[in-house]
Length: 389
Ligand code: SAH
Image (cartoon, rainbow, N blue to C red; front, side, top):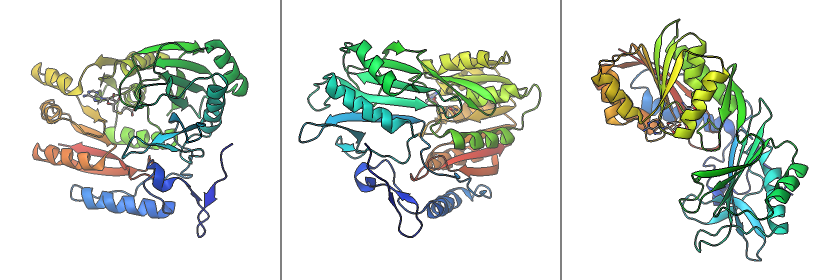
């Protein structure tokens, strides 16, 4: 079973025994110091645009990750271990009691190792290309209690599949769906194109801001639901939605922000590149009884260009790009649509700063900057910015 936690001698806060080896966390200091550090960084990088509000911290900054990916391997004595790849190398670091993961994950991982041993399912070795189990993905919803286990295998054959499912469910009746994903090659932690549902519906549902969302294995979904509610509330406030406000939700994932806007009366178009996420978004609109939102499965930059060329417009542009930020093409076309407000939800402050400079050159000024701590114990800073003409 997982080893006991260690605690900080001064503050009594939890500390991780794998901190230096694992690399999943980058900050090992008391939480109050982490918040101070992030505030200083946000002030340093963004206060030239507008005053930066106080970062919204997490009340209890542990066990927040509702998406947990775990890799399996063998130790020197050929025992099955589980953990993550060190960020700097492809070395597997055994991690048994990660304090960031949702509490459901580690007992399931423990059972996974036991069943792998009993059923002779070998861990996949990225150096030799031998073995079956590449990794597992566990997604949980703290609001609906649903739990999804995705077993990612290097080949399609999963021996004693039925016995595996039976034994897993016996140990973990809380699991509501089990999916096998087949990923013959590709980078560590990626999912393959093919999936078999072994048990349940093949997805979970979560509730956020009074809306219900379906999440498939491959869809992006914010990993910290507690802070996501606060983040979306800030985004909604910055968007200032009224009945009939025309909104574009760019990089919309499973449609979350756009759906919340549509529920508040906006006419929304969501755009998303990942086809699984886009399919979830369409389902999610239906799940929430909305017909004032549509989704386009496309590159956001290309979509904006087409909108600009056809003389399209919108009142509010919401954009939540991945860490790389938006493309230049996206920003140049976005300003041609002349939205009254742009709400930029950013997960990387460096690219946010870069993109805000470009927006400033194009005549948009920041009027609201709100950092939110979505990723305690890491250096990541999430920020909501409102830009207006
Ligand atoms: N707003 C959503 C998702 C944000 S994450 C939420 O809060 O859950 C960023 C999303 O952008 C991901 O779903 C990713 O698949 C998508 N994405 C990445 N590159 C893209 C591109 N070039 N065009 C459109 N969507 C893209």
